[in-house]
Amino acid sequence: MISEHDTAPPADLTDAVYAYAVLLRNEAAELAVRDLSGVDGLPVRILRGAGTAAVVSDVPAEAFTEEAIAQRLDDINDLERLARDHHQVIAALAARTAVLPLRLATVYIDDGSLLRRLHADAGHFRSTLNRLEGHDEWGVKIYAHPPTATPSPGDRPRSGRDYLRARRTSRDGHDLALRTAADLGARVDRMLAEANLASDVRHHRPQPATLSAKPGENVVNAAYLVPRKHTRSFQDRVEVLAAGTAGVRLEITGPWAPYSFASPPPEQAETTDPAIPQTTP
Image 1 (tube, rainbow, N blue to C red):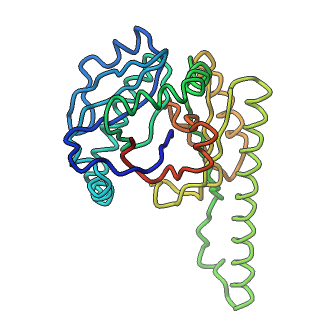
Image 2 (cartoon, rainbow, N blue to C red; image 1 turned 30 degrees about the horizontal axis):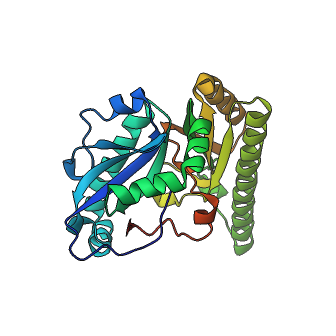
């Protein structure tokens, strides 16, 4: 996500500008925002810069101060609503044109402050959007899922030694499944690169088991930037690789807006914590 530096808004500020995404100025962008509703059901509009544009909503400033945002993020129901509203706008845009998603709760003091940001990072925005044009993000998760067998009464450990041997066998099977899942992830990377089916890849931290209702330990959590013309080939080739690999479970998700590939300009990436929402000047 693109992120900005923390700055407190003026005390007498009544309205602010909530920013969803940056995109190139074109007719598709204009059409995409028609009849869209954003955070808290507010209307969505385009703020036009020189060559690029931002998709925004005008919001009451008191609802998006540092303190107000922190409270919203601490309330799971409010957080879900905010994230859903934010994502729906970005998804509608991504269905029509290349889009650079902004992180959740990116708020500017006014149009002028956002336009200055568009101007300052115009080169980065244009080059990134041109790279994203015609692509979708697809997620590939690979889980270690060794087969389990319920022992019959006659196979149950009869001694401490038998118990330790069974534990060691189970542990060895789990370790083998972890290595197999990691190896499959590496083979997927190589195959997609050699076949030119993905333009870029990002490897994220494995997800905790609590985020999946299905069995298995997440080992590979990758995002691929896939040209739309290669979508079917991408899915088929990854599934074929996984189908021939025992002890793993594959999950392919998408298409998504390119959240994983909307990196900030280099100087911001080095100094900004993207997990902290803020209002920017």
